Length: 485
Image 1: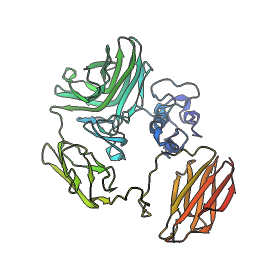
Image 2: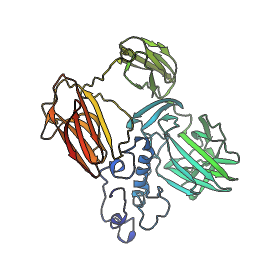
Image 3: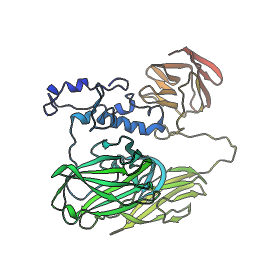
Image 4: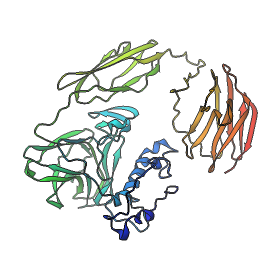
């Protein structure tokens, strides 16, 4: 892997004569961060391009064409999935997935959405066996949708266009599931109204893998999540080997979309889990009058009761309530999640800290604790030939043991995305300021001559004009460094 270029040649050498059943040795894949800082996407420079990060992961395993089943062009990266066949992970019932990747820009609970960025890999569902395995019309793409979800932050989306009589089939899960007279399949989905088009499940059974059985999915209202129960009793005594989905249209269709939010296969009555309360706030330290939303990640629940002393409202039965606090203080939050069986209660004492909002136009500052607090300023593009950084700082003390670095402003991700002001560095006093910037392919560092004083406000400014880095302390040029690249 070199600067975003993937090459299969070295991997082909592990299989004499191209026989994938006779590898020379086992192979371990290290450095999973290659999908982040290996040049496979622009996500490290632009967090808004998170879909490209997931495409980079698909490319790593599915090849340059993002598909493990299609033939690869000469010289193309084939993907690890070409060399290592899929292993079945679903071998017993019940089987369920909600297509959640373990992070998102929203959090949905039974389709009710709270806007909140989050990451919790414990909530990642069983991912599709193939990413991706698509046959038929190439005009329909498949991937994760971060704007629609049934539970968590994502759903699985098929979208694109279809010519008259065309279809696209996507294999999702390899299974080894014995079907009985009591087996059912529940599917929660959204589908854009599409006239003569339709969507159907493609079920492959072990006794005839070449010819799938198609099960029609009823048309639904696009804006609503709908759950359909499908009996599989007609296929009793057969083994379900692959679960897929097919988009098809009798007439030309310019805009097709299907979102899958949940898939469940089970025997007898649908399994019902006991409720388990869980939630997280969009912020735990706020100002008076500042809204907070409590993102509810409870499972197995059908109703909720929130107790929110000091808040407006002070109680709620909403899935994701939004509240404000009028007075400064520390407040508890309690959620009771009810469903089948004993309700689950989660109480978090002293969970919310409310500070008095300053008067309009008043001078204010941010108080950082040096360990966990930081300010997220969003995406700032510093890729132009000139830029500047500026801040007022008042350190309470300086580090006395390694590591001496204390970040002030900017970021450093260990790769080519570095631009910051910080205190200290290896061989540099802990109260010295350092201006660090990635100029071309080289990380350049400019150290201050001045030293900061604890308990004293200091104005810092760093500039770059395409030729020279400059560092100003209290409005006076302190040091400079010629830097081009």
